[in-house]
Amino acid sequence: MDDFIAARAQMAISLGFHIIFACVGMVMPFLMAFAHWKYLKTNNEVYKGLTKAWSKGVAILFATGAVSGTMLSFELGLLWPGFMKHAGPIFGMPFSLEGTAFFIEAIAIGFFLYGWDKFNKWFHWFCGFLVGLSGLASGILVVAANAWMNSPSGFDYINGQYVNIDPIKAMFNEAWFPQALHMTVAAFCATGFVVAGVHAYLIMRKKNAEFHTKAFKIAAGFALIGAFGAPLSGDVAAKSVAKRQPIKLAAMEAHFETEKGAPFILGGIPDESKGEVKYAIKIPKVLSFLVSNDFNAEVKGLNDFPRDEWPPVAIVHYSFQIMIFFGVVMICIGSVYLYAFLFRKEWLSKNWLLKTFLFATPFGYIALEAGWTVTEVGRQPWIIYGVMRTIDAVTPMPGIQYSFYFFTAIFVSLSLIIIFLLRRQIKMVPKLYDPTDIQFKTKNKEL
Image 1: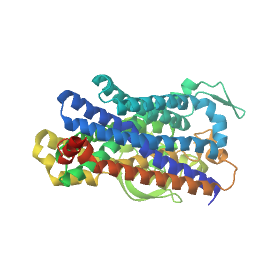
Image 2: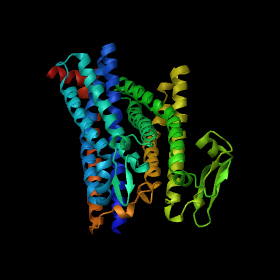
Image 3: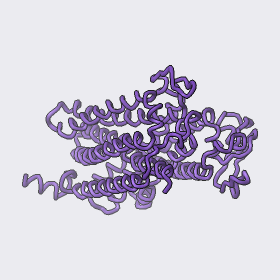
Image 4: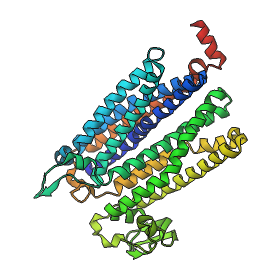
């Protein structure tokens, strides 16, 4: 394997795995805190058990996220020394602040896990809520660093040197808010659907039904917030991309020719050599409206840009289409659930609705991975958009393919360990977490 390709593949695999751990770490504490709040308000022991069960899952994923995040920070220096040499002093602030948020999260989760019946009940609840806030802050700060790569600011580039550095301006670059908003909403959507899908499956098994039903309803509520918020945050992100990175937007839509009243393309197979899209459904003027709120606005096509600055059009276009498709499916599922919740309560216990959520379990993370592919691959061939090419930042060290194999094996192993630990947690629900289960009562009597 070519060293440059191996370095890019290693970062892709690492980010692909870490983004799952990170997003679950951003959202699960809020589900946990909500369940805890319900317990404090209702004094229902089932919510207490649910809070404890979810808190153990949060702890497992926190530890895994810490490992994968640390590996990523090493990989940046190992694989892209040219990038870190110049860019490190500019966007170091969000990484430093992310470290602070991580330590706060670690302290808060320790307080929460071991603070039952030791702290004031509302202080204890706040510790759990703080886990979510600090996890969310960590994710947003890392996104700020990535956004800087898409919209570099806070410095002047003169004669190959980075001068007049302003770390505040670099952190709060033009891409920061749109990316952070869309990422946060997508994390809530993806994690909500995963948790709802798992509990839907457990409800259908007719074991600990009350416990899993309460969990399902909380997770589905968070999933709905994310699903309905995604189009709004996506619109903000798309308008930002159109302004800052018109070539990425053109690749997303496989839009080759500049035109006014540009159509929005659904599906299709891009042909870069001929500059056309085959078998696509074109919705007239919608792309122009989406990027500028004007049906007749001009949208630049790929042919207006140098060919050596094109990203891989097919990969970006297919990823964008996958993200849109699964996003729309989740909105439809969310709409059905909301209708059932408001008007048809009897549907909530129907197997067909539970099976729908079970089937949709991976949809959020498929859409999330596709969206990150659009973000990262769509920036190519730049590692710092318009300033430094990716190939100029890669390490000259040979044998990167072996590093790629090694790190991939680590991430696969971490994933298997997580699956094993979470399955064990689920199996322990009757004994440790569900107070309505006879096994729980028996175990507590023995204790």
